[in-house]
Length: 377
Ligand SMILES: Cc1ncc(COP(=O)(O)O)c(C=O)c1O
Image 1 (cartoon, helix red, strand yellow):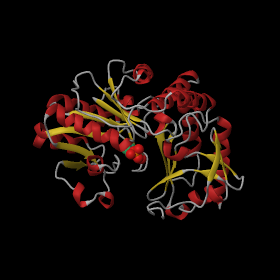
Image 2: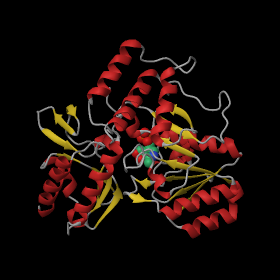
Image 3: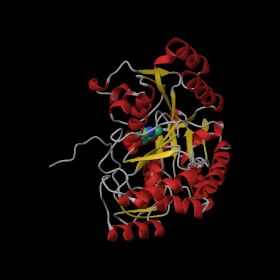
Image 4: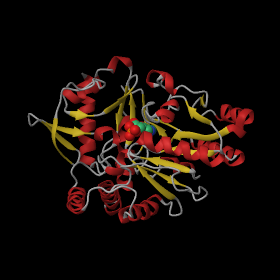
């Protein structure tokens, strides 16, 4: 049997990983500033994480949501505390797409409406509604095409106001990333998020903050949308939540009332997933990783802005986009194969940095040094 070949792969096999360092099958060491796509939040194979998962596996790894799972309650309490949303409610699932899918469904159940406002450049995942709200026709299958999604220009307050004036009473939800990841590290402006909040309040629509990539402390705030100083109704999260263990969730405002059967999943919130998510939150708190993401991220952004070959530096904390001119499009591959540094990318020529939140200043300096050499060719 062959693999279904949907991924363009780098010819590297990672066999060992620790913190922000990974090693390939030949023993070559790499600096990991990609974190397996913003997933590694507390560093690879963190000892506390490994211990907590191992201990849990030796007790019970899985049981379904037909019995009480105390770890879910602990996770909800801890997440409420760290995210500053103690009065919100937690629904657990398995991936970012599933989190957004459930958030959109919840919104529609809540106000009985069908229309969703999403934005140009958005990526919300590949399940049916999430992919329909994703601005990439290539990955939307005919069966996922729907008139229920309206795409508006990003950060365009006038267009948003006009859309609400035209059909605001049909809008179930507005879904937006705090910082567009796949779209190239583009931040939602503070006034735009505030406008979304006030229009959603006025029209009883649901503000969904897709925090799958920009959340979980990556920008120095637990949810990057919080820089706007207004609450979303639903926050979706995944990637950094389990440091590689598939776990996702939605944090739901108190005004939403659940009923049995409203949402559900077989695997979501299983014992191992909760242990992984708890280990992550414990390390985030214990090592003050939001502060570190903010400090090291600001340092990197400042230093990158000084480099004259760079067209633009975007982002916050440890979610950074380095926009390069077309003539330097080769630099990303060179960083990996010559300088042994993993980074992410966004089209057309943006290098994305999405490292673990405990990246050190020395590691940041190592990247800056190698990056400058790579730019000179
Ligand atoms: C902002 C955002 N939302 C949703 C998703 C989908 O997450 P998953 O791949 O876990 O389904 C992603 C994945 O890259 C993302 O960046």
